[in-house]
Amino acid sequence: MKKIILASLILLFSVRLFSQDKIYLKDYTLIEAVVKDVSDYMIKYTKFSDPSGDVLAIAVDDVVKIVYENGIVRDFSKAEARKAKGSSGEKTSYFALGAGFGRSYGGIGVKAQARFGKKQGFGLHAGLGYNPTNAGGLCFGVGAKFFYYRWLYINAQVGIVTHEYYWDYWDYYNPESYFGISILAGGDFFFNDHIGLNAAIGPTIIPDHGVRMGFDLGIVFKF
Image 1 (cartoon, rainbow, N blue to C red):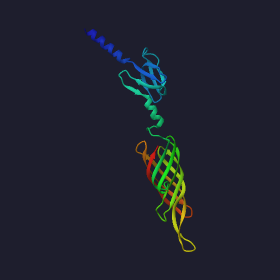
Image 2: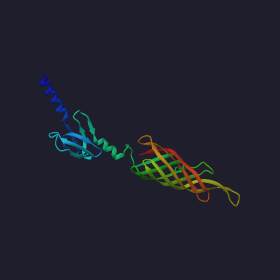
Image 3: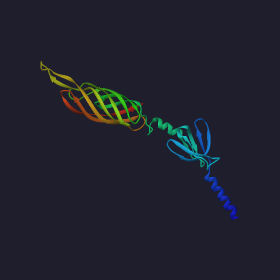
Image 4: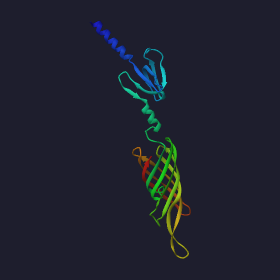
């Protein structure tokens, strides 16, 4: 009786040791295997019919899923979809509209922006709005952004940044437009797939009128 029990335990252990995993490929091939290791790029396995034989390898990009002998499923198609959008599942290239206050918005206004690239990228933007400070008036900004890591950027832009009063020869108090060059550092911080906060700060150079600080603060809607 003890021999029968011992033999049964050995048999169960052997079956568990060489249990069958199933690797499903994109070309609809099914590999019956014993999976040894799974990395970001390769899957190593032996054939189920020869578990002590050579260790083989296949690229993760060629695999749809692995169904392990215990029923656990590892789906590589979902990982591939996340990889296509970026490491965090975020879209790295997009078009966006924003509303807020600051240099890029032309005062209180709106702006349009496009971003291209992956973790590092570049973008173009243009904004139009009303600046209520000084003499008030319509202002605008156009520029380019370098995204040095994900949504963090350095922005260089030009445009009309303010209007101020001056006395002419007839002693009239008239507004004059001031052109400026701004360098802002900030980020587009997205809360979900579509909505985020835009914040940045930096100097604005106004020829013949010195340097003034500027900022951006607004809501961004990503498409």
